[in-house]
Amino acid sequence: MSRTRTQVGIVGAGPAGLTLGHLLHVEGIDTVILEDRSREHVEARVRAGVLEQGTVDLLVETGAGERLRREGLVHHGIELQFAGERHRIPLSDLTGGRSIVIYGQTEVVKDLIRLRLDSGRPLHFEVADVSVHDLETQAPLIRYRHEGRDEELECDAIAGCDGFHGICRPSIPAGVLSEFSREYPFGWLGILAAVAPSNEELVYAHHERGFALLSLRSPELGRLYVQCRPDEDLAEWPDERIWEELHTRLGLEGWTLAEGPILERGVTGMRSYVCEPMRYGRLFLAGDAAHIVPPTGAKGLNLALHDVRLLAEAFVEWFRTGRTAGLDAYSDTCLRRVWRAEHFSWWMTRMLHRAEDEDAFDLKLQLSQLRYVTTSPAAAASLAENYVGLENV
Ligand code: FAD
Ligand code: PHB
Image (cartoon, rainbow, N blue to C red):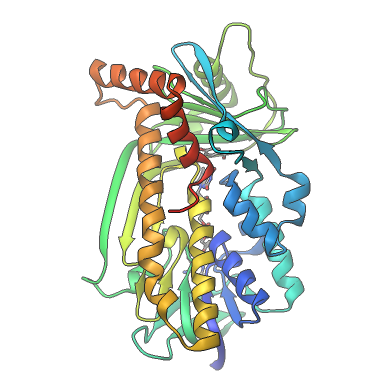
């Protein structure tokens, strides 16, 4: 057994853990990042693709956005499709010039891992049996196995950035957390395809057969989704069926969806979840470890980075001055933005998906809502400011 010390022990090398490690490194604060999967696995996990302006600014301003600035695709609008027509929501016009950037989560993660390795600070992949202890004391501890050895890491604080299925949140004693959640009776089947995107901007499509989304990763890579069952068996979805469904749901007179070889595919369940508070003693939860949203609002990664920005600022204040005001306010401050994103993601999801238990009345409400957000500048502005990320929440 060997025992080491650090200021902040970070569990999880997803976007939250890696960004927190980076922000603290820039401020000269010592961290150890522990990840239970391999580097290859973490770098290949295709997930988010839409970065809010605030997320981009954070990465660029702290020196993690060099490739993002070169390769990220700036988008000024999105399209909503329903009843056989597409309607553009001009995001930038409606938000005083703000925009989103298309840059894959895989690329954000690769950039952050490279920076971390260059910094020389520890980032251990393929650790096993991670557990957190003594959370209500001044010296919380992380135990884990790495390269066949049992390790103990003594910390001033622990950051639980280990995602929705991690071990940090379940380590908080029963009765401390309040949990809020919603399951949706559908999922998304997502593909990455080697094909130039058939539309310049994202298309969110409402269709009687279910939702579909046309997105992209680069000028040569398309990212597309169709609504499916939450437990959908991929074996029942040969390539032809996926494309057929995409053609049906995204199709428009005079427009064709280009096909290409499918490079990656997967099914994601949809859930909303929040736990409160995002802290227990010296354990601070951030990102998906504390809250998840259905992907329809493109908010998960952005919320994760917002959490760790606040957490890093609070740690800096604490280590420099001993003041705990930032740490004490951390959970409440994060949760304000979290709940705004929870509502927006739930609202977008409800507006765009078809559920089996919904009737003709629900359908009429969805279509009315879609017509409203695409014709009323006030309603469109509300969607737009939430989508690009509110500034003062
Ligand atoms: P994670 O990315 O889950 O990282 C947690 C890390 O902890 C993982 O690397 C995991 O291996 C590790 N870990 C888990 N348990 C342990 C343990 N016991 N010990 C050590 N390490 C552990 N968000 C957006 O903002 N925009 C989008 O467009 C978008 N689209 C999405 C599309 C899909 C299909 C999906 C699935 C998600 C999407 N999201 C999107 C959500 C986004 O991917 C997540 O919110 C984001 O990954 C959260 O980052 P995180 O670091 O908090 O958690
Ligand atoms: C994506 O490109 O993966 C993506 C885009 C928008 C969303 C969700 C996912 O709302």
